Amino acid sequence: MADTDAMVLVTGVSRVFGRRIAIDRADLTLMRGRILGLLGASGSGKSTLLRTIAGLESIDAGTIAIDGRVVSTPGLALAPENRRVGMVFQDFALFPHLTVAQNVGFGLKGRADRDAVVGRLLERLRIVDQSQAFPHTLSGGEQQRVALARALARDPAVILLDEPFSSLDGSLRGEVREDLMETLRETGTSAIVVTHDAEDAMIMAEDLALMDGGRVIQTGTPRDLYNNPTSVAAARLLGPLNLVEARVHQGVATSVLGQKSAILPDGPVRMGIRPTDLRLTGPAQGLQARVASVSFAGGYCVVRVKTDTVALSLHLPGEAPRTGDVVGLTVDPARLMVLPD
Ligand SMILES: Nc1ncnc2c1ncn2[C@@H]1O[C@H](COP(=O)(O)OP(=O)(O)OP(=O)(O)O)[C@@H](O)[C@H]1O
Ligand SMILES: [Mg+2]
Image (cartoon, rainbow, N blue to C red):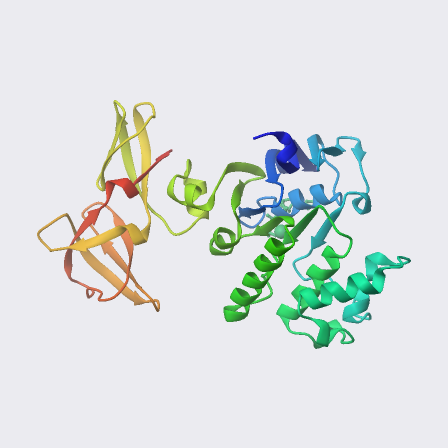
């Protein structure tokens, strides 16, 4: 992977606020024309990292390069307006006293082609009919499109989106997400999307970076990270997880769930399995357990079971057992994750 293919290259970046290390030697690469998801729990440093890339925050160590040019090092920071970066904030941050068209054209003041650029963007993002409306009269999805149009207006090399769906819910969230992806792909825009929602991150992002405690703990494709997390923190970020104690001996990890080869030193580890990767079998087969509770969740049931030693959660589509039933469980060894303690 040549560095010239990198649109944003973050190398060893740290940001300290007083005694708090908000970003801890983070490495991150956004490839040209791709969508990178930044997934992490609240307080893990996602917004701060995004703000350092935008130039809204200085850095205490490392370098940030955009399109091959160093824009931040300790003691040097190119101004945000000179970085060719467009930013969409969590609350969209539209100017309430300006119309949609004026919001979109805000960064183009004095440019002769302003009206033409604004017109094109309004059309592309399907907000032409709302061009004279004020932000407070728009739906969440429309406001998001205005914010995106405004960010795209100055023809940025990169768009940075901080929790773009957090003020939306239900079907609108899905629609806006589809819309946003389509626009980014159509325009070939390189983008970093910050979210704390695993599903948003996996659906949107071609590449994913996981953050925990200010560090980027793992990067890869969503599928790769979901199936092969290298730590408990990474596994947890991507979805619900059952964890049991396990032990490695001579390259094989063993737990109540089964065995799996592991390139780890002898000693205690943990074994993880997703609730969707546990199956029911006949009561006399597999790992014996008793059903502790069953909750209907729409397309599946959440079934909690207890064995002699562990409690596990299953997501079962279709027919579910009843509370109190004795069941047998099978585990596909390929779906087991061995996670260092
Ligand atoms: N200006 C600041 N001054 C002091 N501490 C800050 C500042 N900005 C961020 N922090 C701290 O840095 C850490 C990371 O914050 P950040 O906002 O980047 O997290 P986040 O991952 O975006 O969280 P959320 O999902 O809640 O938005 C937090 O502990 C936060 O309190
Ligand atoms: Mg944030």
